[in-house]
Image (cartoon, rainbow, N blue to C red; front, side, top):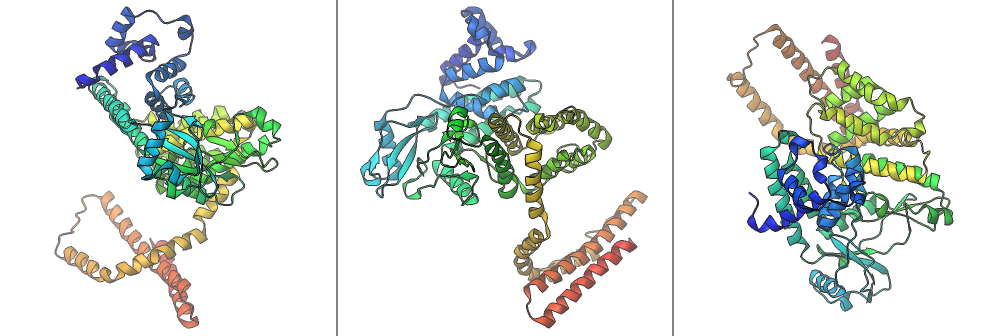
Length: 545
């Protein structure tokens, strides 16, 4: 049920949506009746509004509903699994710029958050904001030691306003769940959860500071990306103080050309930065639109990006990161069979999917792109189409994968803005191959083993008791497995062979790792010989299987 106190707000939302004919985004059979009633009694919109595409009308309506709905629209633009492409593209253009709130309120909020006066914390503080958005606004200031900083402070009562609008969205989502025939696929409550999580994270400026600090550490000394320093002594959940940086907005091409910036080199760096953040660091800037990216004007021949606004960052579970990298590499090689296999193994397709049919579906998506010159192929579009293949099988992708898809679209858009003929494939492939060789190579494996050896040693004293318990339960019949068919017997034999092979492999690796830690000649040689012997036993067990 929608609370009575929310009805005036709900009617205002319905009125704005009806005025902009937003109900036309839906099929006629699914349009809410209340919007049709409002259309009947309201004046017709102007010709200028009616002439706009549907996505632009929705963006205009959200802008009129206020800054929180602008933020909702920006978040919703990442859900290309739910929105038509033209609507999602229009929502990405929403500008989160609103009128500033009074400087007196900003000063009071900063002093409450820091527990001290402005004069005690800052040598100077500019009352005129540098920028004002739906969540916070930014002021210039100077520290006692003369360093220039910017101070980001939350809007007054923003927590209560967001809570009220999220509660309204959740009530509307409940109505959709009860009435929409495809509610199980749309999952409206999950969408509201995602919007709420994103907004709550953006309300914690200390979290944003931690994001900036980690990204800065990942690119310390980099010639490709600069991240401003966080001043933790002047930061809390409600205030973020950052080093002040200056640069040229990445979409100001005239200013970039006037400064002599090499736009081709800059575009290629942008693509490389994306793959480095995702696959080397597994921590990427997920709000990388043109407004959050500047260019260092002091470096012309070897240009460098400057990152801003760290409220929305992304990372992937290690499993998804692996499958995504392998899918990209197969895509670069145009190996459709491999892509089909990887989609199934990653769990993005049903386990019982026919690989030949899936390969044909992937070929149908990719082949029209690969007939073009490489400089005209949009890697982001191909990835979007491949995810759509998975969605047609009613599988739901994790929000972080969807966020990454949106980030890829943003990065590719910036790259083509700077250099319209950029070859995304030629730029991206060697970067990903180099990073992935380093991540999955022998050195990485040895490093992982060394990290796990202390865990194994800590668990070793418990192993005899665990083995005894297992054998006791097996001998008492508690773990008896009855095989009722030839197929199951073959599975049992295969499992037993695999268990033997796994034992010899584990023993061999443990001995070889132990050899890496032992420096005395004789014990080291003994460990090496024993490890090699275990590996040979593994080969023998495998050969006899």
